[in-house]
Length: 171
Image (cartoon, rainbow, N blue to C red; front, side, top):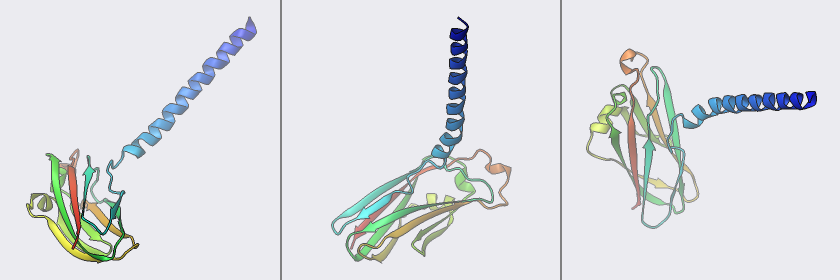
């Protein structure tokens, strides 16, 4: 009887330890997995025919004063040629964060846009650039969001939910 109680006690202790271990692991990794929930990091593959459409969803951009968040999307080109890139930013939900952040968009080292995120959202025209891409050479689209250090409590709790619609067409 004592051995059965001892075995039950050990089993209960093991189960409790297992539950706490799983809770700790989930508590550490779930925020990491959910942070910056966006698909900025996907590869966009371009071929020699047609047009490529890609929408990048940014849900609840999380950024603090004095911080930068940089996301990079890889472009894979199957045919050397001239391409036209078009970018449209569409706000999905009214959020105040747009008032406090700046954005820089680059294609490789070429700056496509640098300025106020609010102005970018309010601009009804697409950002359009033409560039030559090489076959089998990767290029990178970089989106860098930055909140100036002097922004204070007014940005606390502010959010931004938006889509970036990218159209790439071979000219």
